[in-house]
Length: 267
Image 1 (cartoon, rainbow, N blue to C red):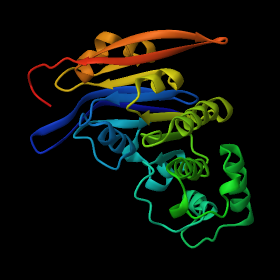
Image 2: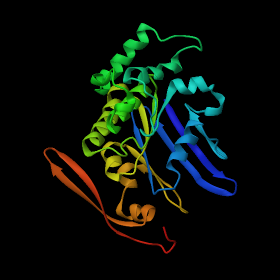
Image 3: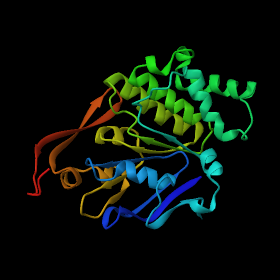
Image 4: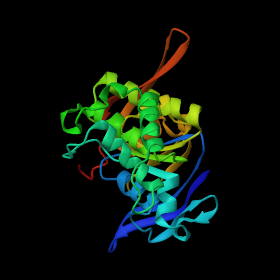
């Protein structure tokens, strides 16, 4: 599957938030979206999904304008994972994940044994079988995030779009989520579009990147080309140092913020 945004613009009234957004996501690839707070990362995801309408440009699925598809057909091909917070539904992990099968059911259908088998299979794939009967309101942020990812996977989508999946998680759970996304693209061929605040995380898992920059041209390309010291300073107004560290047989990249580089416009 191919997901594209071509010449996307979005704003409220005369205030333009997103300008000339262009990117391509293939099956089996990860595209990371980065940028400072308030630059429009979550808005971009909502526009790409069709939750908000582009004022110019559009989203395309396999060369067809998304607006030509029925909503149910989009839900079967593209799954959305919101941030794991403010979850007040006292559903068990099993029932929450089962909601992901709704896109595959007709209006008056009830979940079948096959649907429940897929839930069990997905929980095992994600590594959360131990959460089967646990209520979502009793879960940690990391556990809930994994449940929401499993719910998305239950749809058997071709693309998964995630809004800051590692936010508010500790180091261990951040790594678990990142490794899961990377494993999923390799094992299932699903394409992943993900927002993140962490440049190191983008380098760790992503193939390509889209860097949103206030009042400037956005940058899109290979992730290691996008995340440079010059580009980070331009996008975040922060001087950073990028270094590589060899550990075992792997190279790890660190992005260390050094100091604020104000442009005089204030925060």
